[in-house]
Image 1 (spheres, protein in one colour):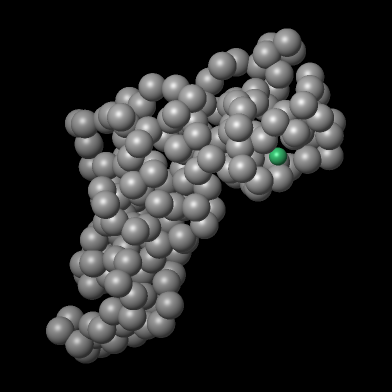
Image 2 (cartoon, protein in one colour):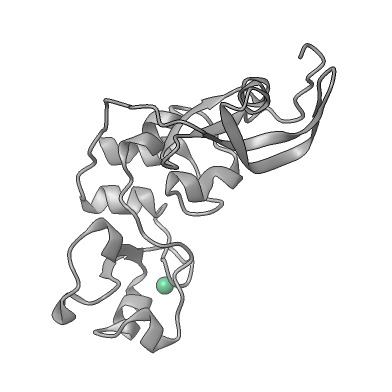
Length: 186
Ligand SMILES: [Zn+2]
């Protein structure tokens, strides 16, 4: 395996068997896991790794074949600050600067005040949307809102995440600054 030459400095995201993000390892380490059948490639990065006997696409995201129990799980309270941090202060509907919190399914229609139903929104979109759903407006959410569970922050630390990890970490695509996400834990 000494011939493995990673073409990216991001490393590889390791998912548990349940697809929960666990950690980031070097692409070489991820390749070893794949070659040992301890993990399967979920998403390939750029280029290839060359071992003595195999050529392997550079792993970007790998998933463990067996579940590993992770005892620690951080809970992040659903504060306005945390919601803005999760959504990077960007409106879920128009990508503009967000100033408000919107309930995707309006509370007046039974929408819960939960991570999965709140997004940062600009005042204009929030006002236009009113008591309607995005579908009724002909709008689409860029990503499904999810709770920024511990793993995303714990996994990343101060790393700059590969944008291709975003969907696995519950981060909005291409808006993956871990320092900003970290503010959600403050
Ligand atoms: Zn907007």
